[in-house]
Amino acid sequence: MFVSIRGRVLLNVEALNMTESVGNYVKHRRVPVILPDGGYTTYFVPAISGESVAHGFQVVLAEVAKSKGLPVCKLCEKGIFLKSTNKSVFKSAFGTEVPNNEFEVEKKIVSDCVVEDVGGFLYAEEMNVKRTSNFFTGYMIPAKEALDNVVIEPQLHSRYALGTQFAREQGQMIYYVELSSAVYTFSFDFDSKFIGKTTFSYENAGKEVVNNRKQRIQATLDAITKFLIEFCFGAKKTRFMPIVEWESLVIAVSNDTWTVPSPFTEKYIENAQKKLEKVKYDTKLFVFPRDGSFEEVVINAMDEAKRRL
Ligand SMILES: [Zn+2]
Image 1 (cartoon, helix red, strand yellow):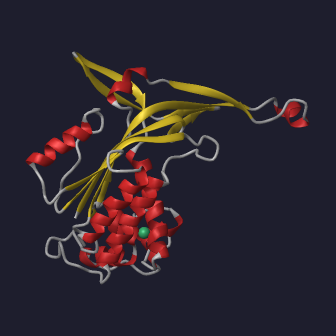
Image 2 (cartoon, rainbow, N blue to C red):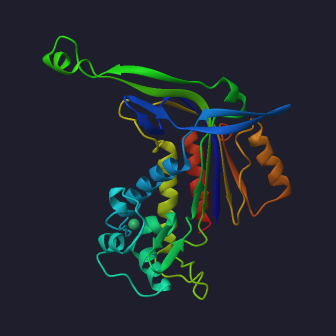
């Protein structure tokens, strides 16, 4: 079962993905994007990285999996996604020594941590074991029509009040945080094919190593529901919580890989319907706002995905 999600979300006054700070100046992430406008013009625009989106999703996944009594390792359950990087991380996460062959390493990690089963890991020691993530996401960038109008603006804030000894001793602490506002694209896919199965050593690729594969996929779908409805990603939300309004969303549920076309283009919903006329793997589309409220569309799509398990 394959779930593909594409959307457009209006984010006002957001600081969801910051990069370095230079002194007291905190910068918003920027990426180069090409706009076809007769020729091709490159713009440097605010963006939210796929790593940021993936981190948020895995925090929700860890919580949902734990609440359903599914295993999550000691690091992932705290939102520390070191993902079995090396021997010492492996020991801290699972409380045991590292097995001595690739299949057993992947089997142990997959069985004992749903986050790494779904989100992949890279064990890099003398022996390397890699598991590719079963969910896919990427940079959120301003939508095509918004691209040449997007700005990033530094906002001034101060920490110490004038008239207090602290301001007299240190001066008034001022700092700048870059904010932006734009309609952003959103992309997220999930493929359930390898959940609970090993993939790395070719002799054992596709071998089921858990006895609760279905519950793991259900937990992932529940995590997607919460993640989308509660907008569970991005940084600086304690004081820079953005004003969030989903403009549109398409979720495709299929029996094989079927991705919704790029939401960079305004016509993406129409493009998805055109694609569906030509190619489908028992594909069903759920479209917001066409098919109901945002919550209804997400819940109905995930229920359809669950029916296919
Ligand atoms: Zn883990």
